[in-house]
Image (cartoon, rainbow, N blue to C red; front, side, top):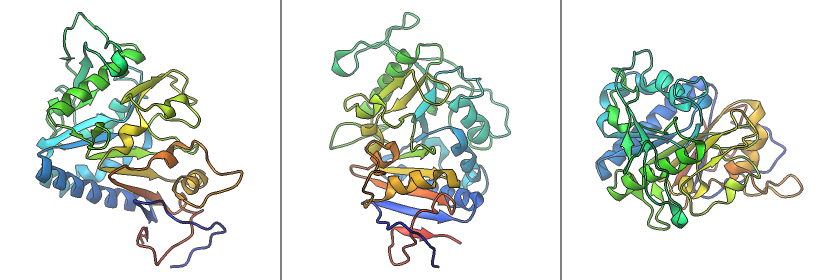
Length: 322
């Protein structure tokens, strides 16, 4: 199939692009993609550690709640995290936890169990003390509300931020919790940089090219040693958020970015092309900085988001699904 484009396009290394006619087709293919990674991870490691984003991304996970996946996947081995979270209460409309609970894990099912929320004490990178919360001497897991008869993920396998803490303490505590799970290899570890090696990090991209809560030209983009950081000046509300840093995202075994709509077309082109030059070349586009160190990146796009890309029928890295 030939498609017109005025911009030469070459994909980045270890980058696969899948283009679909509709959001429903994206959901179908994404479910199979996640299913395959889950099965491989459970077979090789005994666990499947996945980090999600919020917003419209959750709506693409619905197929996993349906047959055959709701019966065939080994949900007992799933461990769920968030690559970013808004510093709001768990029942707030803009909470990624709430969006995921209602749109995926407990879709249509009243919740009654618990998730892990981190409150802890220790030392972080560069010797920075971890927060002491509620007089805790070690990470304490407070009750939450995560249970689903549709997607039977054990309630203790869902890890959210402490929404009672300051955004700084929430970020520090979340990193501390991840470090403990890396020690016991529930989450893998990168051999290159000792960062956590999630089996899959699932991201969405904004029209400005941001991923997780890493925004263009923000100082958080430059962090090298922290695993989780916080921001108080998000250009999009709410202003306070926590987010994985780029080294953690890029250390994942698999990264998927989902992007739909023609308002994302320019950012998609700038993010994936290796030949972008000139005054419009991005210098600090977060999505462009997603470059797995020892993993695979797959883009899931609708035809509108991919409209600036040139069809490459002879290139296996570009697939147009009809």
